[in-house]
Length: 282
Image 1 (tube, rainbow, N blue to C red):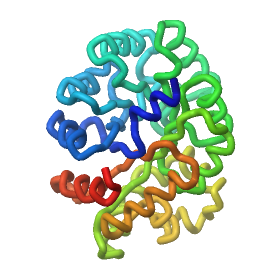
Image 2: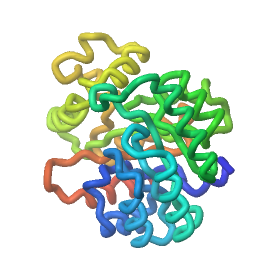
Image 3: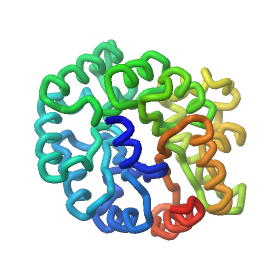
Image 4: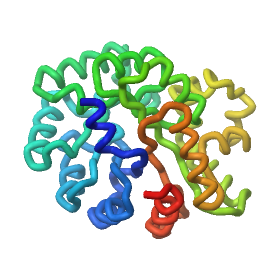
Protein backbone atom coordinates (compact mmCIF):
# COMPACT_ATOMS: atom_id res chain seq x y z
CA UNK A 1 0.00 0.00 0.00
CA UNK A 2 2.89 2.40 0.72
CA UNK A 3 4.22 1.74 -2.78
CA UNK A 4 0.80 2.61 -4.17
CA UNK A 5 0.78 5.87 -2.20
CA UNK A 6 4.30 6.67 -3.36
CA UNK A 7 3.25 6.20 -6.97
CA UNK A 8 0.16 8.39 -6.46
CA UNK A 9 2.15 11.26 -4.98
CA UNK A 10 4.93 11.31 -7.53
CA UNK A 11 8.25 12.89 -6.63
CA UNK A 12 7.07 16.46 -6.08
CA UNK A 13 4.10 18.17 -4.49
CA UNK A 14 3.30 21.56 -3.02
CA UNK A 15 3.02 22.56 0.65
CA UNK A 16 0.80 25.58 1.16
CA UNK A 17 -1.11 27.06 4.07
CA UNK A 18 -4.72 25.92 3.96
CA UNK A 19 -5.89 29.52 4.38
CA UNK A 20 -3.87 30.52 1.29
CA UNK A 21 -5.19 27.77 -0.95
CA UNK A 22 -8.11 28.11 -3.34
CA UNK A 23 -9.73 25.66 -5.73
CA UNK A 24 -8.20 27.69 -8.58
CA UNK A 25 -4.70 27.23 -7.18
CA UNK A 26 -5.30 23.52 -6.65
CA UNK A 27 -6.48 22.99 -10.22
CA UNK A 28 -3.55 25.05 -11.50
CA UNK A 29 -1.06 22.91 -9.58
CA UNK A 30 -2.65 19.77 -10.96
CA UNK A 31 -2.27 21.07 -14.52
CA UNK A 32 1.40 21.86 -13.84
CA UNK A 33 2.05 18.23 -12.92
CA UNK A 34 2.49 18.35 -9.16
CA UNK A 35 1.31 15.11 -7.61
CA UNK A 36 0.02 16.36 -4.29
CA UNK A 37 -1.06 19.44 -2.36
CA UNK A 38 -0.27 19.47 1.36
CA UNK A 39 -2.35 21.81 3.51
CA UNK A 40 -0.49 23.48 6.35
CA UNK A 41 -1.58 25.56 9.30
CA UNK A 42 -3.61 22.93 11.21
CA UNK A 43 -6.64 22.71 8.90
CA UNK A 44 -9.85 21.85 10.74
CA UNK A 45 -10.66 18.25 11.44
CA UNK A 46 -13.88 18.47 9.45
CA UNK A 47 -11.58 18.36 6.38
CA UNK A 48 -13.92 20.71 4.53
CA UNK A 49 -11.03 22.57 2.91
CA UNK A 50 -9.49 19.35 1.64
CA UNK A 51 -12.83 18.23 0.24
CA UNK A 52 -13.35 21.52 -1.62
CA UNK A 53 -9.92 21.21 -3.26
CA UNK A 54 -10.54 17.60 -4.23
CA UNK A 55 -13.87 18.68 -5.72
CA UNK A 56 -11.99 21.15 -7.92
CA UNK A 57 -9.45 18.60 -9.23
CA UNK A 58 -9.46 15.12 -10.69
CA UNK A 59 -6.07 13.46 -10.04
CA UNK A 60 -4.29 15.63 -7.46
CA UNK A 61 -3.75 13.99 -4.06
CA UNK A 62 -4.59 16.29 -1.13
CA UNK A 63 -3.03 15.80 2.29
CA UNK A 64 -3.08 17.59 5.62
CA UNK A 65 0.20 18.84 7.06
CA UNK A 66 -1.07 18.62 9.68
CA UNK A 67 -4.31 18.00 11.58
CA UNK A 68 -3.31 18.87 15.16
CA UNK A 69 -4.13 16.08 17.61
CA UNK A 70 -4.82 18.56 20.43
CA UNK A 71 -7.30 20.52 18.32
CA UNK A 72 -9.54 17.85 16.80
CA UNK A 73 -10.60 14.56 18.37
CA UNK A 74 -9.71 11.39 16.49
CA UNK A 75 -13.32 10.11 16.13
CA UNK A 76 -14.35 13.39 14.46
CA UNK A 77 -11.40 13.29 12.11
CA UNK A 78 -12.09 9.64 11.29
CA UNK A 79 -15.70 10.49 10.43
CA UNK A 80 -14.48 13.32 8.19
CA UNK A 81 -11.94 10.99 6.56
CA UNK A 82 -14.70 8.50 5.75
CA UNK A 83 -16.79 11.24 4.13
CA UNK A 84 -13.89 12.53 2.00
CA UNK A 85 -12.81 9.01 1.06
CA UNK A 86 -16.34 8.11 -0.06
CA UNK A 87 -16.48 11.20 -2.25
CA UNK A 88 -12.92 10.97 -3.61
CA UNK A 89 -11.66 7.40 -3.18
CA UNK A 90 -7.91 7.11 -2.73
CA UNK A 91 -7.08 10.79 -3.21
CA UNK A 92 -6.73 11.96 0.38
CA UNK A 93 -3.88 11.45 2.87
CA UNK A 94 -4.35 12.26 6.55
CA UNK A 95 -1.26 13.90 8.00
CA UNK A 96 -1.39 14.32 11.78
CA UNK A 97 0.98 15.69 14.39
CA UNK A 98 1.38 17.19 17.83
CA UNK A 99 2.05 20.82 16.93
CA UNK A 100 4.16 22.81 19.39
CA UNK A 101 4.23 23.29 23.16
CA UNK A 102 4.45 27.06 22.68
CA UNK A 103 0.98 27.03 21.09
CA UNK A 104 -0.82 24.31 23.06
CA UNK A 105 -1.63 24.39 26.78
CA UNK A 106 -2.48 20.69 26.93
CA UNK A 107 0.83 19.67 25.29
CA UNK A 108 1.91 16.80 27.56
CA UNK A 109 3.43 13.39 26.78
CA UNK A 110 3.32 14.15 23.04
CA UNK A 111 4.70 10.80 21.92
CA UNK A 112 2.17 8.80 23.92
CA UNK A 113 -0.63 11.14 22.85
CA UNK A 114 0.29 10.77 19.19
CA UNK A 115 0.53 6.98 19.40
CA UNK A 116 -2.86 6.82 21.13
CA UNK A 117 -4.36 9.13 18.48
CA UNK A 118 -3.14 6.83 15.70
CA UNK A 119 -4.69 3.88 17.53
CA UNK A 120 -8.01 5.73 17.74
CA UNK A 121 -7.96 6.58 14.05
CA UNK A 122 -7.38 2.95 13.14
CA UNK A 123 -10.09 1.82 15.57
CA UNK A 124 -12.45 4.18 13.75
CA UNK A 125 -11.56 2.56 10.40
CA UNK A 126 -9.01 5.01 9.02
CA UNK A 127 -6.50 2.81 7.15
CA UNK A 128 -3.05 3.20 8.69
CA UNK A 129 -1.57 3.29 5.18
CA UNK A 130 -3.41 6.55 4.48
CA UNK A 131 -2.02 8.22 7.60
CA UNK A 132 1.36 9.99 7.82
CA UNK A 133 3.01 11.68 10.78
CA UNK A 134 4.81 14.96 11.24
CA UNK A 135 8.07 13.47 12.50
CA UNK A 136 11.46 15.02 13.26
CA UNK A 137 13.16 13.02 16.02
CA UNK A 138 14.02 9.31 16.01
CA UNK A 139 11.15 8.16 18.26
CA UNK A 140 8.38 9.68 16.17
CA UNK A 141 10.09 8.64 12.95
CA UNK A 142 10.05 5.05 14.20
CA UNK A 143 6.39 5.41 15.17
CA UNK A 144 5.61 6.74 11.69
CA UNK A 145 7.38 3.83 10.04
CA UNK A 146 5.93 1.16 12.32
CA UNK A 147 2.33 2.32 12.61
CA UNK A 148 1.52 4.50 9.59
CA UNK A 149 2.44 4.95 5.94
CA UNK A 150 5.42 7.13 6.85
CA UNK A 151 6.68 10.60 7.74
CA UNK A 152 6.30 14.17 6.52
CA UNK A 153 9.16 16.09 8.20
CA UNK A 154 8.99 19.89 8.06
CA UNK A 155 11.79 22.49 8.00
CA UNK A 156 14.54 20.00 7.26
CA UNK A 157 17.62 19.94 5.02
CA UNK A 158 18.67 16.88 3.01
CA UNK A 159 20.93 15.71 5.85
CA UNK A 160 17.83 15.14 7.97
CA UNK A 161 16.29 13.21 5.11
CA UNK A 162 19.37 10.96 4.98
CA UNK A 163 19.16 10.27 8.73
CA UNK A 164 15.39 9.79 8.61
CA UNK A 165 15.70 7.20 5.83
CA UNK A 166 18.23 5.27 7.89
CA UNK A 167 15.76 5.18 10.79
CA UNK A 168 12.70 4.36 8.68
CA UNK A 169 14.35 1.76 6.49
CA UNK A 170 13.45 1.33 2.82
CA UNK A 171 9.69 0.75 3.05
CA UNK A 172 7.87 3.71 4.65
CA UNK A 173 7.08 6.92 2.81
CA UNK A 174 9.43 9.84 3.47
CA UNK A 175 8.13 13.19 2.20
CA UNK A 176 10.04 16.21 3.58
CA UNK A 177 8.99 19.82 3.09
CA UNK A 178 11.46 22.34 1.65
CA UNK A 179 11.11 26.08 1.15
CA UNK A 180 11.87 27.74 -2.16
CA UNK A 181 12.52 31.29 -3.37
CA UNK A 182 12.83 31.67 -7.14
CA UNK A 183 15.09 34.71 -7.32
CA UNK A 184 18.68 34.95 -8.54
CA UNK A 185 19.36 37.96 -6.30
CA UNK A 186 20.96 36.08 -3.39
CA UNK A 187 20.56 38.81 -0.78
CA UNK A 188 16.91 39.41 -1.62
CA UNK A 189 16.15 35.68 -1.71
CA UNK A 190 17.87 35.08 1.62
CA UNK A 191 16.02 37.96 3.23
CA UNK A 192 12.67 36.53 2.15
CA UNK A 193 13.64 33.05 3.29
CA UNK A 194 15.01 34.32 6.60
CA UNK A 195 11.76 36.09 7.44
CA UNK A 196 9.82 32.87 6.96
CA UNK A 197 12.32 30.74 8.90
CA UNK A 198 12.69 33.17 11.78
CA UNK A 199 9.00 33.70 12.42
CA UNK A 200 7.76 31.43 13.80
CA UNK A 201 10.12 28.49 13.48
CA UNK A 202 13.22 29.73 15.29
CA UNK A 203 10.97 30.37 18.28
CA UNK A 204 9.66 26.80 18.42
CA UNK A 205 11.70 24.32 20.43
CA UNK A 206 10.74 21.25 18.37
CA UNK A 207 12.42 22.79 15.34
CA UNK A 208 15.41 24.35 17.07
CA UNK A 209 16.15 21.08 18.89
CA UNK A 210 16.05 19.22 15.60
CA UNK A 211 18.35 21.74 13.91
CA UNK A 212 20.82 21.40 16.78
CA UNK A 213 20.79 17.61 16.30
CA UNK A 214 21.80 18.28 12.71
CA UNK A 215 24.83 20.29 13.82
CA UNK A 216 23.56 23.87 13.73
CA UNK A 217 24.79 26.00 16.61
CA UNK A 218 23.23 28.63 18.85
CA UNK A 219 24.96 31.19 16.65
CA UNK A 220 23.31 29.71 13.56
CA UNK A 221 19.90 30.01 15.23
CA UNK A 222 20.32 33.57 16.56
CA UNK A 223 19.13 36.82 14.99
CA UNK A 224 17.00 35.20 12.31
CA UNK A 225 19.56 32.58 11.38
CA UNK A 226 22.93 32.64 9.66
CA UNK A 227 23.29 32.41 5.91
CA UNK A 228 24.41 28.81 6.43
CA UNK A 229 21.13 27.96 8.14
CA UNK A 230 18.94 29.84 5.67
CA UNK A 231 20.70 28.30 2.69
CA UNK A 232 20.17 24.82 4.15
CA UNK A 233 16.44 25.36 4.71
CA UNK A 234 15.50 27.59 1.75
CA UNK A 235 16.42 26.65 -1.80
CA UNK A 236 16.98 29.81 -3.82
CA UNK A 237 18.27 30.97 -7.18
CA UNK A 238 16.95 30.31 -10.66
CA UNK A 239 14.26 27.67 -11.06
CA UNK A 240 16.94 25.32 -12.38
CA UNK A 241 19.17 25.94 -9.34
CA UNK A 242 16.20 25.40 -7.05
CA UNK A 243 15.39 22.11 -8.79
CA UNK A 244 18.91 20.81 -8.10
CA UNK A 245 18.53 21.66 -4.41
CA UNK A 246 15.14 19.96 -4.19
CA UNK A 247 16.45 16.82 -5.86
CA UNK A 248 19.08 16.57 -3.12
CA UNK A 249 16.30 15.25 -0.88
CA UNK A 250 15.57 12.48 -3.38
CA UNK A 251 19.27 11.64 -3.48
CA UNK A 252 19.22 11.47 0.33
CA UNK A 253 16.36 8.97 0.38
CA UNK A 254 13.11 10.94 0.07
CA UNK A 255 10.24 9.52 -1.97
CA UNK A 256 8.44 12.82 -2.40
CA UNK A 257 9.36 16.46 -1.73
CA UNK A 258 6.77 19.01 -0.60
CA UNK A 259 7.73 22.36 -2.15
CA UNK A 260 6.80 25.47 -0.19
CA UNK A 261 7.14 28.45 -2.52
CA UNK A 262 7.86 31.73 -0.73
CA UNK A 263 6.82 34.99 -2.36
CA UNK A 264 6.26 38.54 -1.27
CA UNK A 265 2.79 39.16 0.21
CA UNK A 266 0.00 39.35 -2.37
CA UNK A 267 2.28 38.16 -5.19
CA UNK A 268 0.76 35.68 -7.65
CA UNK A 269 2.43 32.34 -6.79
CA UNK A 270 1.58 30.57 -10.03
CA UNK A 271 4.53 31.85 -12.12
CA UNK A 272 6.91 30.50 -9.48
CA UNK A 273 5.15 27.15 -9.32
CA UNK A 274 5.20 27.01 -13.12
CA UNK A 275 8.92 27.76 -13.34
CA UNK A 276 9.82 25.17 -10.71
CA UNK A 277 7.57 22.54 -12.32
CA UNK A 278 9.25 23.12 -15.67
CA UNK A 279 12.73 22.89 -14.13
CA UNK A 280 11.77 19.66 -12.37
CA UNK A 281 10.49 18.19 -15.62
CA UNK A 282 6.92 17.72 -14.40
